[in-house]
Length: 395
Image 1 (cartoon, rainbow, N blue to C red):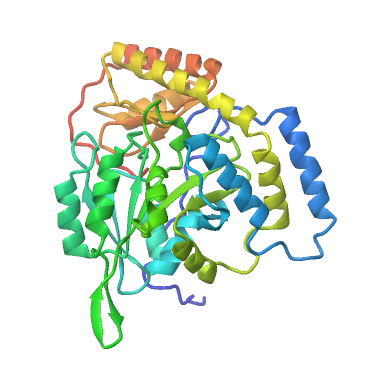
Image 2 (cartoon, rainbow, N blue to C red):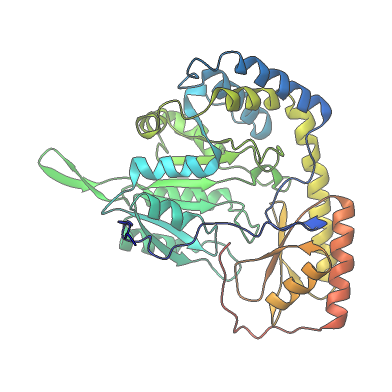
């Protein structure tokens, strides 16, 4: 039997993946529960058919039409008008993050984040041979700015990733905190050689807004700080987004980011040639043409989410205010048993994050009714109290 030369660090590693189970109510991977309308499907089908007739040619490497459409969308959604040259896209926000770490991470460099947070971050770091370092968020899942300063001084990371709204907690970062982190990150990156001497660099701060469209009214996007960057204030800021969540296009695999022209230019260096297929570009452009219809679902999902938080609290549970399309709730003495009991009743949620807590994604009204009924039944059959001894699980 041969022995494969597996790269050090991958021995015994398991692939990422949430459970994929065929159950009536799937509320575990933060998908938009609403399928595209027939009008959206028809537009995508026609656009892809048109692209199919040119599949003998490579797609546009820098996809200018898609970048213009994404910039137009951000201007409507967040009130932030950026030039298309400051927008970049890839196959899901996973590839966007990977490209950032390919450009700025690597051997001898570190990526810093604050837990609990998204469990793919260490995998992005691992796959780019970047050291992954974490520090803890405060008990209410906010950032302690003094702790951020201390971590940057200690680690000097090339990249700092902050999810806002955070996964799995659903909490968004105040704009003042993001601005404070950006100021601390100036000169807080690794030492780089410039001529004959070595000096500090600015740590790249990635604000992951995968769930940004679900933020509550009055909660700003970090995109607003990129307007200040027009004067070169925050060239080390990246704000990432995705079409998977609010747009209901998880199967499309289209993630994107906004940043300075200089930073986007460096991502063009590390991207694979023709990384966005012609059919992906065509489908994304067609979907963006229906942005008003697709975004109209967001308001109803926000309403369902807020009602769910109130309902869980009425049951005596802790449910955190959420700016995403999911809610973290608990605590339970044995959350795995609660999860299994819900699954037996046809409801799939997620065991993630802080010990004792579960995460449920917001579904359709019928799906939420099914979740409530199942949880009431489970709690009636097995009352639970937290004991704080359970191990934290990945998000």
